[in-house]
Image (cartoon, rainbow, N blue to C red; front, side, top):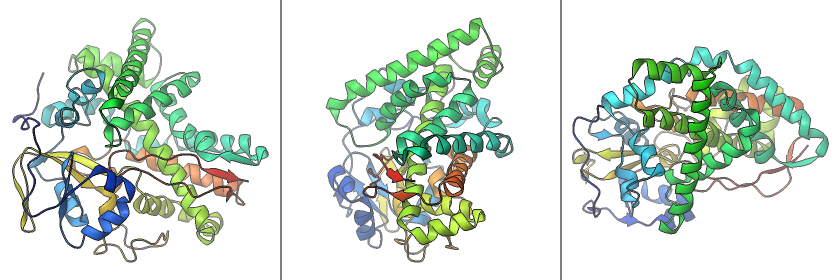
Length: 412
C-alpha cells in the first residue's frame, strides 16, 4: 500500500524554538483562553511541552492549514505519547484523519459522496424529527441533564442510522467512542494508556463483528455498501476498512455532543439571545457558528512540520508536532471585534469556519455536524422556549483535540 512520499522525522526529544517559551500542559489546561489571550499579541506561537509548537494567531492558523510544509501526523503523535503498537496506534497508522497524499485520498474517497452537503440535507427531516421526539420525551420530567438526554443522543443515533448500526448499540459504542477520543487530547498520562487501549480494542472488535455480519447478510445501508466496494476494488486493507469505520463512529458522536451542549448553555446564559433565536429561527445558523467560535468543541488541529517553518521572525522546527490552535484563532483580536463577547449577530465570522479545519483535511463531517447542531437548537427553542439553566454553567475543558464537557442541568 502507498504512504507518504517523505516520512516524517522520527519522534525524539523536543527541539525548542529559540526565544519562545515552552508552556506546560497543566497551565494550558487550567486556563487556555487566558493563556492564549496573554501570549497571542506577543508571539506567533509558543512551545508546548509535548507537542513542540502551539500556533496562536488566526491568519497563521488559516494559512498553515494548507501549507505543504505541514502534513498530517501519521504515527508521530502516538509515538510522542509512548504508544507504538496496538489498537490505539492502528487508529493513526491506518486512518484517513492522520494520513497524507494518496493514502489519505484512498481512505477518504468512499465517504466523500455520503457526507456531501447535498446528501446530508436529505437527512435533515429525520434529524429534526428525532430531536423533537427527544424534547417531547423529557419535557414532562422538568429537570434533566441535557448532555445525557439530548445532545449526546442526536449525533449518536444519526451516525447509527447512517452506518446501519442497531439503535440498541448506541450506549455501548458511544461510551467506547468517548473513551477512545481522549487519546486525541493531552489530558491523559502513561497510567491511562491501558484503559484507552482497552476501549480502542473493544471498539475495533465491535466494528469487526458488524462487518462480519454484513459479509454474511448484506443490508441496504452504508456499512454494507462500503464493505462491498472496499472488497471489490481491493484498494483498502482489512485493517483500513475497520479503522475508517472506527474513526467515523468516534468523529460522528463526540464533537457534536460537546458542541450541542455548549451552544445551548451559551444561549441560556444570554437569555436575550436565546429569546431572539426563539422569535426568529433564521438566526439559528448564526447562533451555531458563533457558539463554535466562542467555545470550539475541537481545540486544535495537529500537524507535523516537514521543514523548518519561519513564522514572523521565529522558526517552528522541522520534525515536530505542531498544534494549530482553533481556540486561540477563534478569539484573535485582529480578526474579531470584542472576541471574548458571545454575540450571535456578529458580522465578522469567516466564510469557512476554522473549527472544521482546512485544506485536504477539512472535516468530511462538517455538513452533518451543522445540520445536527441547527436542528438540535431548532427543536429546543420551538418546543422548550422557557428552558433555563438549573445548575452551574458547564465548563468546556481542554486546549487541544476534542474538548470535554460534563453535565448540563436544565429545567423546562
